[in-house]
View 1: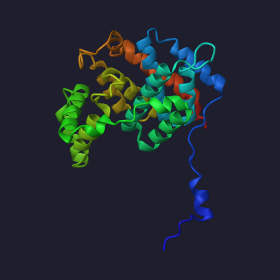
View 2: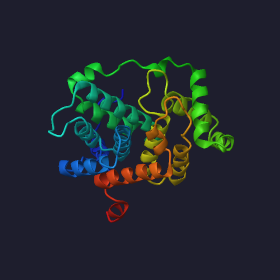
View 3: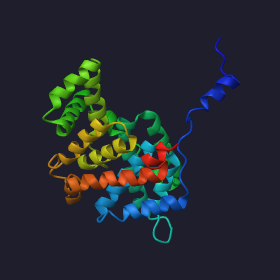
Length: 274
């Protein structure tokens, strides 16, 4: 029978090589970074974009405590008092939606860490009223495939067929799994789950890939995907969406991701010296 307890040597081995998440920087450093970057968002809609993009960046950096601090920062007024319940619930819903969509780009383990950091920071009254239903589970396989292909094509056209063939050559399940489960079931919006627009989803993707490092081709593809987000959903598209889907908007997303990453994990030059 296999032992239910790990040996001391194995337990010690598991603590090595970066087993822990990245700790949050000092509060004053986060306050300064959050304040300076949020001040670049000139409209309420862009402030929401700032919150989503910053969430995606911190989740990718694997700093759950920083995500919890971000929630507190975003839901306090100028006197450091909690904002009203509806505003706090809206912020929490936006952050957790940005976080769960990051699972596509950064993987499940870091997404678990990040969402746990957010959940632990939520007040009991927010936890009590956050939506608990899961409309994604109600979507059929066919719906996910159709929505996924529509979103995938909006990012990658005119290279969709070539890219799908390449992905399938890597593994016969790969292309279909990406389209149905990542782009269809997770990245696409379904009725009842519209916290992130098509444009903001792409902005979070760009931020996450930028913060990841080492995935240049994917980052370039999703920058193009952000620029092609205009017109995807004309009925709900806002002026802020249209600005985000411009080169100026893409530059803002990248600069924001860089600024937050530099505070939490250091600049590339600083990391190279370690």
